[in-house]
Figure 1: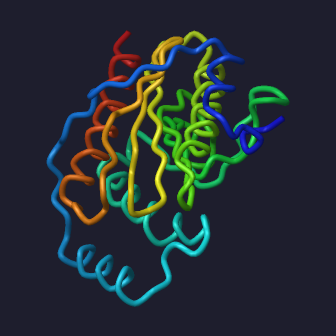
Figure 2 (figure 1 turned 60 degrees about the vertical axis):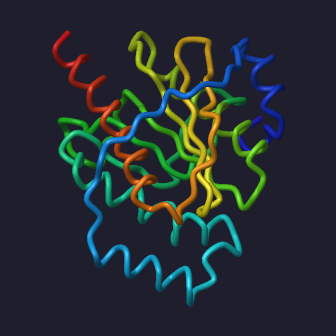
Length: 206
């Protein structure tokens, strides 16, 4: 079936017997944004067509934010772009971005656990969450016995939403965050990366 065939989050919840809830689980971890990044983002949003397609949203708005934060954590994680993720014929496809453990064999090895799935949509957040949740479920299944929280982000570039999957419970953060509030957005994304790092450290120590 593939991730892209899921259009309704209710369908995903029912098919995989996942419970949906809403809550405020997100924290904020302060992040120092360079002046260059601020100026470049302002220029792109003012002068470029940044959201005419999902590819444009990815390249111009989502990836630059993720990349800036990932640079702090690169020694532990690889941020994969449009990498194939396959559990079975229903849970397969190419999430926009996946944050996974950096393999001891090097950056070219797609290693688990998988911690973060990112889905880009021009405006259809409901459809985006159906696909993102399916991707999160696939990651959870591929992680096998590794009991980690899987995080998800759905964004149209300008608005960002967050969710997490723990066992069979999906929690959707109740707020929509704007890229116009760039300091807060970076603090939120940095918080997600921090949570992923904490889980990885716990797995290594176990």
